[in-house]
Image (cartoon, rainbow, N blue to C red; front, side, top):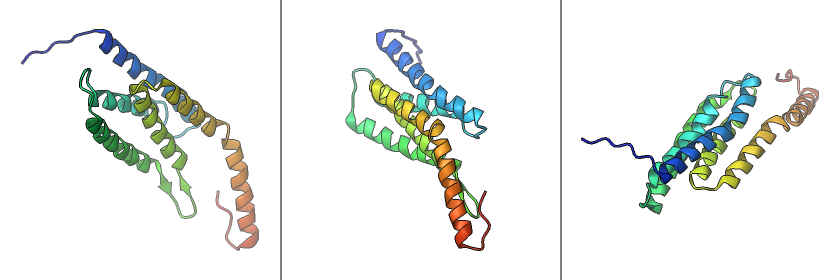
Length: 161
């Protein structure tokens, strides 16, 4: 068995893609970590980088196959769905982790976009995800409090939270 490690232009481009996918996920991972979420600075970059790598592996240089890429994307979506499903927790009166699951899903797409040289798509998804998690959080909290107040006024059950 022969083992050869060739470093050429395509290899460099793939390494850059993996690094870009990883780096695009870091701001969201750091934000989630600062907010004390269980999924954060390690998970998001790993999901983005691994998604990028799977797409790259489905299309080795000079051997593009739409069928292979389609099968890898299907498996990738199922795997990311499994990880996201593990982030969702249901208690008696509420469900938590859906934004985390959706964010994991988004960063799977970021990695796939980077692997496909769709850097602008990856950047926009990264920025919109960060915006959604960071900027829209206070709005969500206000809406939740308003809904809890409305529920407590119309029922005998105590508000959740």
